[in-house]
Length: 290
Length: 159
Ligand SMILES: Cc1cc2nc3c(=O)[nH]c(=O)nc-3n(C[C@H](O)[C@H](O)[C@H](O)COP(=O)(O)OP(=O)(O)OC[C@H]3O[C@@H](n4cnc5c(N)ncnc54)[C@H](O)[C@@H]3O)c2cc1C
Ligand code: FES
Ligand code: FES
Image (spheres, helix red, strand yellow):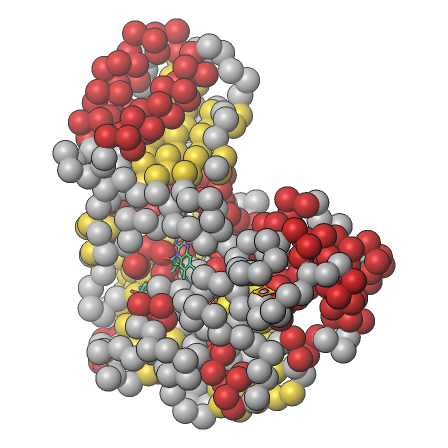
């Protein structure tokens, strides 16, 4: 059993991380559950732990000069869901996490740090090309979230680093779609989720993106498939759709997703694209939480 | 670095010295004898251990005491004699919301958090507000109805 520390500044935490190998505990909604021992017993961890919730530098949501949005690692799902500054897809994903008490505890840093394929936040964040800011006593580095999450429960976090924040670059979409299909139970974890978005100007698709979560070890996004639509006119969508769906399907590793989920994903994507090609009104297409 | 965790429970100051990973529920029940806080699942799923932390509903079984430094915690014992607390508890009695009672402290805390941020919730909003609270007895309808009653009867109390 390791020691437990409660640092109050980032610099203290970074030293504890480097010198004692302490692992961060934020909301605790993954760690406390995974290591629970029962009534009146504190959870035990085989490594030193630091409870980081008293570090104010890791809190808050701010808009940067270039229009990017920076979300501090300790920001909760409830705070994300309530913030006008956070992009719509991410707010939707945050508001669909667990029930209200869970959303008041669960942090974005924990959701990413845990790297569970069932985690709801990486999916829209990866679609939006979000990156993570990693701090250590040696400084800071920034990497794409898609590169940071290596696989199920595996990240590129170094032994001396902690996640400081998540940065979402600015974007402009004409059409947006988000849907999470889970069990009909509030604290259910997502079984399948899809984000999609398109920027259309004068009938031309300037930007198209989609990502799917809880589908395999990692969030699925296929830039190859996306490129098949970009630069084309919305009127060409019906012709392009079969090849696009095929390319998307191929991006999913063979054993990652059972057939019914593949089919549901394809159905949602073709619904979104058909709505666009039939001249749907700008904004949010269908979608939402089920 | 904190070696002592200082926070407030039902308006009393508490200083905790010990393992910061101690679950908040254990500090509330074992050290402070606030046994209105119930433990059902111990994993954040059932809501029986719900308390307010700085005005927000949280499940005290998954929060280590080291995470509540400086916070204001309220349990059922801290709200039951307030006007708002009474309003909800009376409505639960009047609406027949209580059977075995195990889930009720958590339900009352969830109702309190809901009505404090949304004085006149729709039925869907009420169901969402208590969706993290499991009741094995009532089938929820009478609880939902009682929360609606508390919203109506409380009037300006919640505004
Ligand atoms: C009842 C229940 C329902 C749930 N429902 C959902 C759901 O619907 N959707 C969903 O996505 N998840 C769900 N979860 C899982 C969990 O709540 C989320 O993954 C949450 O975002 C974890 O955040 P946390 O702050 O509580 O993490 P913690 O448990 O504190 O930490 C999780 C991991 O992240 C690491 N970590 C935390 N912060 C940092 C940091 N700043 N830098 C580096 N590493 C860090 C920790 O070391 C640990 O490995 C649920 C959990 C419960 C108990
Ligand atoms: S005992 Fe805490 S949520 Fe069930
Ligand atoms: S009244 Fe028995 S669990 Fe709700």
